[in-house]
Image (cartoon, rainbow over all chains, first blue to last red; front, side, top):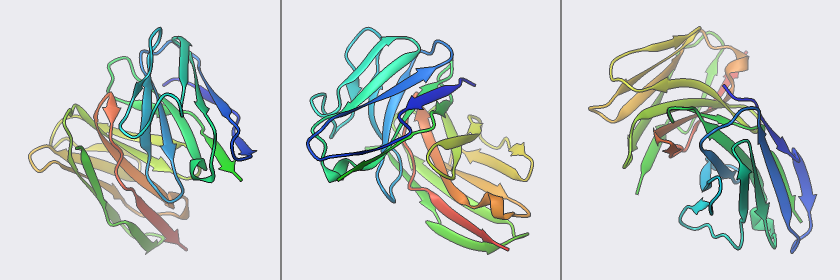
Length: 114
Length: 108
């Protein structure tokens, strides 16, 4: 399985600001995903980060609010823009295995917006 | 729309008990069903199931998939306090859909 790191592990931010979360994998992977887990809820997929092209967003998520970059096969960033308290969540990146059957998760970023 | 339902939503048992967690699903693209354990932030991978009727085991945990019934179960025998966590199932292919989760609490 891949070793995945995320930065920051947690942050407390003010309303209206933006935060960029980084996800680094120790090997090249085809697919990287960004999830959100709001308090008491399950994981919801935000988008699939595509290398060399625009991310594919799920229903309810837009690029202006959650811009994503993926400059290469081992790194991606998710920005949470113009934050509000409703954005307080755990944000997780994940990567799939070569055959796409399994996903492994990074340690997560706990975001609190005041 | 993809749908994944887990039951029960929460469960409190005593150490040594055996528990069975259920997952039923309706998803557009299916290739495998994944089970995860979530204690703090990141879900930890437990099992990947692709074939019906073949049990996967890891220590006291086991899981089986029923493609006909579109369901899966996760069994934990001789539960320990360290098993206390949220257990998530996620069927799909590449883009998986996570279930609601079952919160298990094991008390001494």
